[in-house]
Length: 212
Image (cartoon, helix red, strand yellow):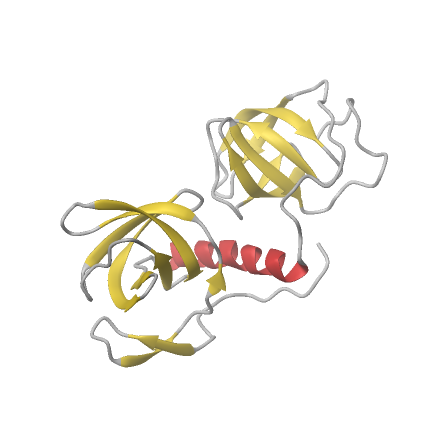
């Protein structure tokens, strides 16, 4: 996709608050992203939540019950999975918390958030923008970033993306390959996920005989 890409990493600094409420420096750029999920407090109480913004080092949540400052919180986001950390600040709509991640997982989350940020900056819509067809050859191989492979079913495709039926549903923003075609996961649904091709096909190149 065309456009300027901003890499989210450790080099960017913004003000933050420590677990003890003292001024500090944010080491990560935050991305405004709304993702649904649930969180669990130390009391084992669970509540629904939604992210307001997020970075590889922390997140701001819209939440009905605020934890104590310094309390450990476990969050499960439908799109990105499980995160754990500690509450650092209370706000009227909820609270902010740190995220404890290994360097490798932090790098992966940075890539996913970079994808969200660049998509927002480019103003790309989430709806289906091109006519879709059901290919005659629906069986294909899905290849994940770690090299794992599995067979999937192509439900439909267009010049810009594909709908895939599978029990393996990568997180939003994950780069994967179907057949020989690289794409990015942009949406989840009950039977699988939708992906957007890194390089779209030209008009007229996609029909029922197309193989990825």
